[in-house]
Image 1 (cartoon, rainbow, N blue to C red):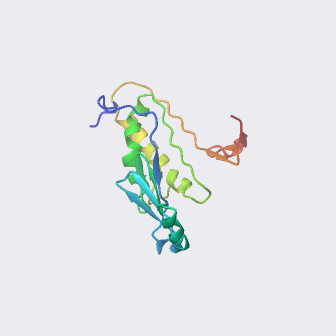
Image 2: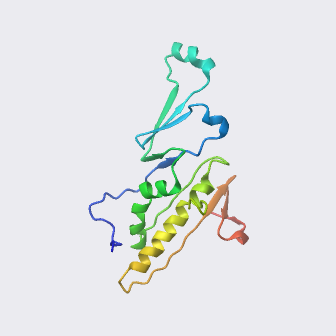
Image 3: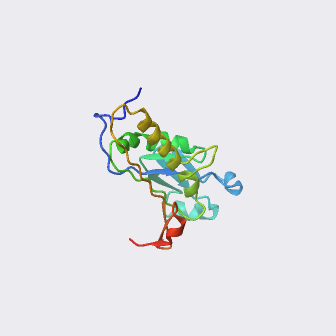
Length: 172
């Protein structure tokens, strides 16, 4: 049975940044506009052909490279993201540490799908809670556990509690 203790040899990290590229739309699939390299880099390609000459003259690259702790391409599942970037935090949570998973992006970019998911592809919040309760169930000690979870949305500078619909606007 796996231990619920955090590995002693693991480096403690205060912040890890992961990016998940949403699946491409039908129109985007024909163009090569985003690539993930070595699971750490996202390469965005400028597909505006009319700028080709200007870019060469001005010695500009047509690609923008962004580096992250973890990068996931459009075909990655929520489970892929969870296993690579979140699951290692969960044993610490069961020991009493706090963890925050923060999804950021424009409307329609896939934040809800990544956090909540579907029956076929459960989201990061669902996978995390399943793991937390599985670890608690396997714990042989007489420890008591109290689990709390928040699911908040900040939209147009207003905070909403998505687990308590009647809460209205929340103050900081």
